[in-house]
Image (cartoon, rainbow over all chains, first blue to last red):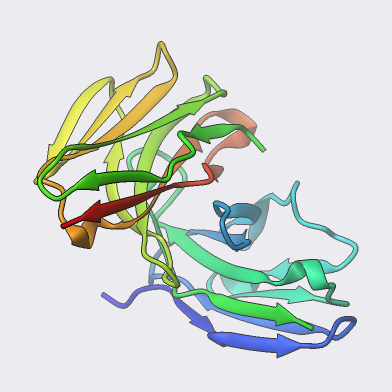
Length: 116
Length: 114
């Protein structure tokens, strides 16, 4: 079974530029998460999708971040314009569903973003 | 964000010893609990999940859950240098409007020395 796919693996941009990250979850997984992980910290939940609907985006900086999951499969996370403090690893994870016991979440390799 | 606290570490143990990692959580709605291992520069890897009070064993790993005390722990027996990593505690909210939200602690860095 293929895992969660993310691209690109690395991205370097200048501040105020825009960037987009792509995620393809494990086949059949209805729940998709985007996390931001700053060096030395745990992953911070940015947004959670259930199929193509947003369940939780309370910690997404909506003035600059946006995310979508059209057709309930692939997802894209965008930052526009980027700030220096956005430098982090952006992790995508998916799980089969939201109800017990389908709750185990699996991560992709992440995208390491450096804003200079 | 719902609070998930882990002992700050770093934790250093000799090879063959038992490593004990602890986690507390603040939200009583939490129903599912996970331990992830994260090697430096890599993404988190799920190693244990636990849903009921008590112990769950998987090889050298034992997860312990006490919902009354809002406490979950991970024991690693016969620690090996390859266990050196950051261990992340994750808590999932499984009721009502918070259904499915998955929150992480800061992680505890474990070093196992030969």
